[in-house]
Length: 404
Image 1 (cartoon, one colour):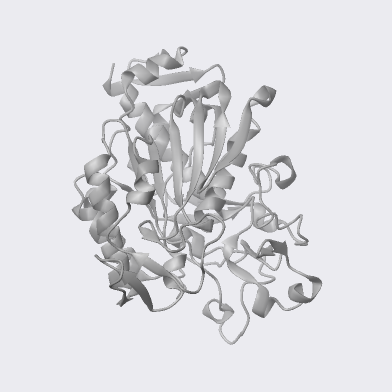
Image 2 (cartoon, rainbow, N blue to C red):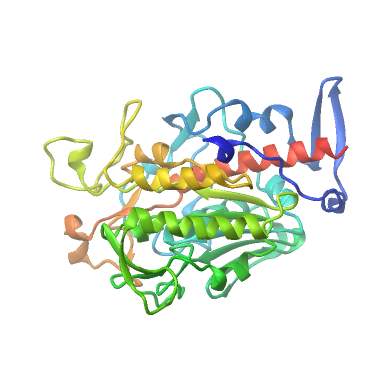
């Protein structure tokens, strides 16, 4: 995908590495180096090279009840009711036991302390809608149990939720922004769902929070897909027009890209963009002749490929085009295909709606109340974060070696 696929070095300053205070070099032999970040964690050359030598997005789901899930629902106090499917009554748990296996490699084992050392004295921000919030919750759950002594906290500063690891002076932030550009849905709690209005030419209100952030992870998709057209402005706020969604999305992406190019320093910051999270709204797409949704699905879709109608090729093409033209490398996290297989991973009726868990009557009507957009945790978003972790290992390792 041109420039967007080029893996730029993760340009954290050498001074920040030295600040860790415990980085040591260990020569395994004359040809390889392991970086020691803490007594129990290393980055080996093989781990660091996974994303540069293997397409980690091409693979299959394998059942693994030995190492999955990576954490327990009840062990993470930061999960919201929206994603705690077992606690909310889901009778099966197999959706927690699937591991993503790239065809030509193994993903590095996720190590929370290694990630925290990489993020020492830094901020990582995940920007997007409720799908991105779920990825943020997943990431917090993956690391929080490794922080001993209660030196961790979560606080809200709308539109942000901030997890803070005190020992590492590391922040992992979720920032609510469903359209990336400004819109009438930007309030973290009081946002309109049906009467959407997007300002295609400005990110100023949001970007002041992005400025200087070390790792930026953007996502924006589902909120665009309510209708084929969307009301938007591109200039004076009173000049509202109806735009084709794909065209509007492309315009918004260009506004975002202009800000990234003008404000991100590739020597000190890293930018990722998540591809669309798929939906599984119609069972006839994977089981011809049926007329249901993802409710009661317990296994992934089998086969080498599957593509549902909920994942827009046009939107993905717009993202690819914009990233390809950018002067700064942005890594496109192409998680759509691997997530397409996971019809079993959604919250369905074991979730909340408008802040309340579904009633008994609503649960009995999954065709109308089943949520086949959002994901249970532990679950599919954990894999997105495993892949993100692999990229960060690569970048940190190569930065260290190029600064020696």
